[in-house]
Structures are given as C-alpha cells and as structure tokens.
Image (tube, rainbow, N blue to C red):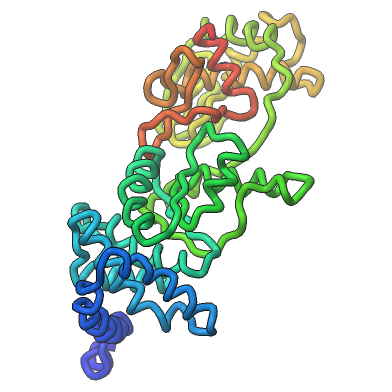
Length: 358
C-alpha cells in the first residue's frame, strides 16, 4: 500500500491537487472583480442566476461565484478569504467535511459555498450549535449577502410559525440543529401543506459537525404533548423519595449482587439509572399501603417512584437543570446553555418540579 501511495498518491492528495488548480483559476479572476464598482459587483448575483436559468450548473459558475463573494467579503467585512479558505469552501460545496482549527475563519469559509448554493433559489441552511452563534453569524455575514442581493433568515426558539416560515423563505437561513430538526418534525405532523414552515432541504452547512452528527446524535429529538399531570401522585412519590437513602455505584453488574446493600435505592452512574433495593420496595409498599409493588395494578405507583428517585439520585440542580422564574429549565449538556421549551419525558420533568417545589 505504501508503494502504491508513493507512485499514485493518496485519494485525498489527488483530490487536493485538482482543487488547487481550480483555486488558481479563482484567484486569476480576482482583478476582474476588484475593478468592479459596488453596483457591478452586487449585480453579479443576477448575472450568475441568469446563467443557471440558461442551463449552466453550479459547478459551471462556481469560480465566478467564489471570486465575487470573496471580493464582497473584503469590501464589507474587511476580511479577504485566503487560499486555504477557498479550498475549504470548495470542499464544503462538494458535501465533504473540512477540518479547520479555531481562528482559521470557518465562518468566512462558509460564505462561499452558501452564496453559490443560494443562487439556485432553493435555500441554504447554515446549522450552528447554539442560538448565540446563529444570531451572530446571521447578522455579520448577512451584511455580505445583503450587499450581494440575497436575503438572510434566522430561526431561533420562540418564533411564531409565520415568523419561521419567513425565515425559511430567505436565501440563506441560520439556526441550530435542534430548531431545524424540530421544525422538520412539526412539518411532518401538519394536516395542510401550507402550514409547513420549511420549504425543502436543498443544501446545508453544518458547523461543529462532530458535535452535532456524532455527540448530539445520541439525544433523539422527540415531540410530545404534556401528559395529564397527576400532581398528587408526583407529590406523594416526592414525599416518599426524599426520605430514602441512596447507594451510588460506577456500574452495576447484576441487580442481585446489590440486594443486601443497606440503602433504599441504587444509582448506576454509567447507565444513568436508579432502582429500588428490596428494602426500598418494602418501604414503598408500607408508604403507599399496597401489598406488592411489582403487581401490574401498581405500575403507575412504581413509575412515579422510579422517576422520583431519578430526580433525587441522578438529576443535579445547576448541572442538568436550573430553576428560575420560568420553572425548571434543562441545560444542554454539550453547550451549557438553557433549552427553553424543552422538557424531560416520561414524567421525569414533573418529578424534578415536585423535588424543587415548582
């Protein structure tokens, strides 16, 4: 394999050589766009759209699009994409992953493929990890796109369906992966097509792709309505759970091996779970006045107890959630930011509310 690579070069090396030749061509166009007036440069968008309408492809117009938006970046932001950033922009347009370090101008790189793909008129989504970055980038880069005659939208939590629909109608829309994902799920639940807020999925640029597509992929996006809150049962389970003693382990081998532990419930840190010990189950039967907690007829009581001991044994205030004037707010484990509008499922959120007296 080493000899073959020496003779033919690796696939990445060969692709990079092709890209660098194309970058040479883009750079050769720089004087042409530098000589244009602001009005002429801005009108490039109409010229390129017309070329697409006449049958040319995005690849056909890519060099001119990159050269034009590069000049616009320089005039509006005072930042001119370097050669390595042109390479990054081409890689992103090709649907590949470009690894760039902090400070290497990722946001600037994204302007080139975003502008190119927005020329199709089908919309571009720029996916960021939090609302702050989405808002910041949409405002800063939006100045460049506006100069070039394109519109920019921002999708954040709290917008009405009509406001979101307008944001998605923009040429380039910024938002978080959660907002894009939940809007997609809600669109699949509407009865009438005109109630949908997204207009399709043409092209997306994903920032922090390893975090969004790998780390956060472990957390599913689920839309659910708030169930009927049996306040009395949550309060009773809370009154019971707050008196219990817990035993924390790193990882549970088998439930039976912990039956003799002098505690009421066990917290398994690795599984992120909590279960009653036989001693705890006996206390539950006495507290709730039942004969056997395991009987199917007592499943609702068992469920509320399980969520209550999870609230006390696993969920940590100011780590997993905070309590403020809006109630119990979930903290995003990846970004550390609050997630308004999100609730824990299966009654855990109500159990935490009972624990905190909210």
